[in-house]
Image 1 (spheres, rainbow, N blue to C red):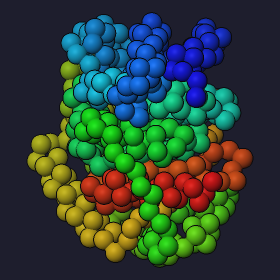
Image 2: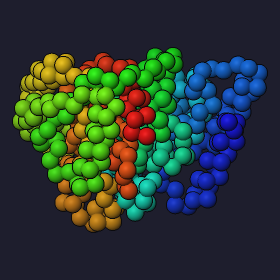
Image 3: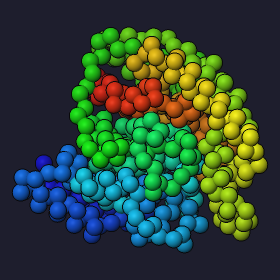
Length: 431
């Protein structure tokens, strides 16, 4: 295997060739990355290793604190924010494990939309077709992992923001159970729903990064056999409106898994999804909590005017939600999460297409707000179930697709390691 420094230089050379139009990264750390890569190579030559992450080239989404610089979170109004005093906990743990942090990746403004368009810093083109959206909000992370300008990309997921770009760019994206990975030094969207998760080309690399970020220690991933695996398929609203290519890819994936020994089980969850939709009809948890995070600048019309209207408008409307309504919503969400946990108990995993569409082209969405809103809703529909019901979830590339699409697996709260083990076997079957 080439040295960490050689792999890093190859990536930096690729990025330098498109520096004038670079949209995948918002900031690069070439000298710090070279020093980290050289240190890793020196350890390797001396027969010493900090673990399996030592020397891996890792990118981080632009909402993780890096000491000495402002955290932009995809927004121009953050350019003059005070510099971070210290690295985010996950960044520190990655560095301590020997990761080579190459730079910060692009994101949508304040991680608020799923399409991946950012009017302030530009929109990365999809890794499979640059004319198409990357998905968001971890847009640069998805493209970076897919095109190989990082070996592992770290993003955040509040309603699908790791799994959506993973699916649309053709890589693996893992959302851990909320609270598994510390959020210290991560710019918030929703205190209740935010998760930090990795994107990579393999389940093994995602599992490695997750273990380091969650505990600082690597974990062994032992794939589980599929024979007898109870795989639920929730026929109903979450399978409606699939584009033909996604529908055929999903069925092809299920057929392969069934042939490998998995038991496919019709498993209804529409009643719980409908109940959550009803509970959030006057405002989602993410929207209400995000409005609280951004209340100061929302109160200043001059600053608010500098924020994308598709972000500022919904946030401003959620400021009027009362504390009592928010508390009722949190209680109802907890009730529904417990009900979903009980519903999933007879299964090993639940399977869905990550999103019902392949990546649409950027240009029509930029010029048509209604079209962009429709795409945003479709992209969020399936993956947000995991966040709303406090589950763990992973997206894997579906085979035989001309444009990438994802197979998404859900598991119960806290069953992260088991889900990753199942996903490793599913990955091998799908090829």
